Image 1 (cartoon, one colour):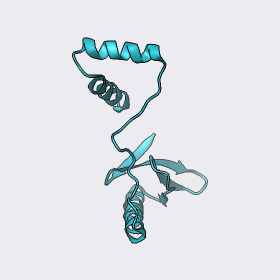
Image 2: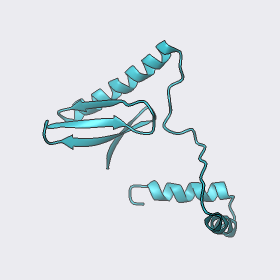
Image 3: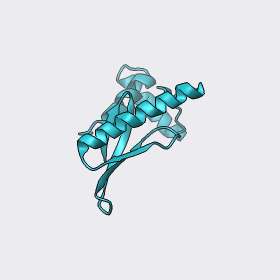
Image 4: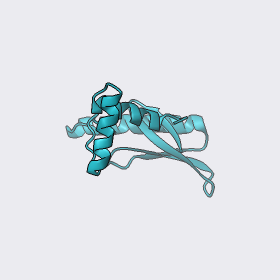
Length: 112
C-alpha cells in the first residue's frame, strides 16, 4: 500500500488507470476525505489542502477534528492468547502494554 502523511494524518494512494490520475483517501477517521492529482507533487499539494480544509471546517463548526488514533487500544482476544502474551511480556521483563507496543511497532514497520 502506498501512503503519504501530513500533520498526523495518513492517506492511502492509488493510481486510477481509467482516469490517469492518482487518488488519495485519508485513513483512520470516519469523515471521508479524498483528493486527487495527475502527478505526485500535485497529489501532495491536494492532500495538504484537504487536511487544511478539514481542520478549518472543524474549527468553523466548533468540533474537535478526528485524529486517526488516540493512543488507546482495546483488544478482545481469546484468554489463551492473552495469557501467552502476558507470559511473554513478563519473560521479557516488560509490562504487557510495553511488550504489545513493541510487537505492534515491529508489525507495522515497512520491513516488518
